[in-house]
Amino acid sequence: MPEHTDIQGVNMSKSIRITIVFLIFAAALTFCGFAEEVPYKGASPWAVPELDKAAEYGLITDKIKDNMNESITREEFAEIAVRLYEKITGRSAAYSDMSAFADTRNPEIFKAYSLKIVNGTNLQRKLFSPGQFTNREQIAAMMFRTMQAIKPDADFSAGEAGKFIDEKDVSDWALEPVKFMIKNDFLRGDGGRINPKGISTREMAVLIAARVYEYHYPDSGKDAEDGTGTDDKTGTGSYNWDQIVINDTVIFRDNYHIRSKDGFYYIFIDAERFKYAFKLPYAGSYTYPEVEIIGGNITASWSSGEDTVLKVELKEGNTEAVVGGTKVDAGMAPYSVGLKMYIPINLFISAMEMDVETSSNDDTLFVQYKNTFPAEILAGTWSDTETDLFVKLKDIEGGSVVLPSYATAYRFNSDGTYELIKVSAGGINDTIIKQRGRYRIMGNTIMYYEILETVYKGAPFTLKHEDKPVDRPHYEFIYNYDTKEKIIEIGGFWLNRI
Figure: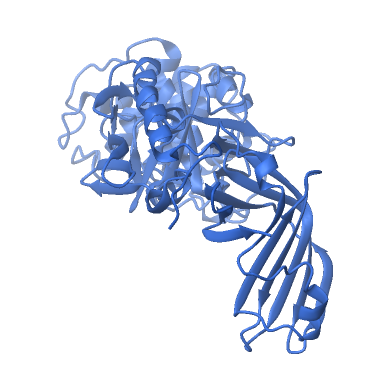
């Protein structure tokens, strides 16, 4: 493989190493602070935005924070209810004695009982059953009584609460509380059902508590919802992007998480996607990082052969990171959901000197290197064979040119338009794909958009469709460029200038 050089002929691996070593010290200054534990673990991705707010409100108790997707017990909910009461009223809940129940000594349960939020399961035997799981209608009723304790004179009528399909499954004693909770959007269902007898999870209970908190303090969640809070380098005031594009790796909404802290947004992606997203340009065989996860300890390192270019160490549940041997505060900590480990990427965006920007309609966040590959170098025709597919296209379509099994050619024009031809002519499912559209260079990534595609198939080739619009943009990474050989590596394939 030829020596990989930049456009001046200077070794790129060395240049990257110097830049990143400098940025390690910049990161140490930028991410100052003390390490702290992540506020919760094991949450469902859909629950994360509201759980982040609940954590800010102080509604996630120590007993539940390590596994938010676990079923919630009566004891755990009593603690949440008391915490919510105290946060909203500003008063400490009290209890007179601990003789009401024989199977618990938890003072939070007796506080909840004194506030008439909870009852026993067997008054004759003085049982509370603290470890018993609680269902959705029970949660609704207990939260209803919590609100009554907070503001006894308020209107708690259900009024014109919307109908739900499984209303008949709600116990008579719970029907009014359930309707009230639905009317005020505290309790939410799915497909017109609220599943009243379904066991509630910890995160469900916390989300209901957070909604009640915001009902009493309507401005409390404003920053997180409308983006009016202070942004850091990875936020533009909105975080509901349809997708995030890191170099040429597209990560859709369901596969990234956003968490906020102190007015800053932090982006989390899972470790598998991280491996392919954060690659180095001009690094030859060492483009991708090595990512190792052992017992919650995460190490990501990039090398250039014998030397380590960058090494970052993180730990699940801890915001302290080690970047090139220097301790820094990453802002938020990695966490796991099921078998996936989610890594906060803000630190890497800074350490690898990357820029962020959003699309014009604000539905895509781009994370790219600051130094953009020169457009004047890319302009021209490139092919992975000795054949100029653009000149020989008519002969190819007619079957008079013998081609390798696969051939690709690009033509990048200085006006921002491009053409692409891909040929598969191995005798099985022969195909010609032609594209034309527009392109833009972002960092070391080429974005193709406004794409029209024409496809031929068969032997001889037969037109299948012509100028069919391609719905989404397409991305390819420029891995390497060699000035002497005039070759470029796009999308993992070496191409020669024609």
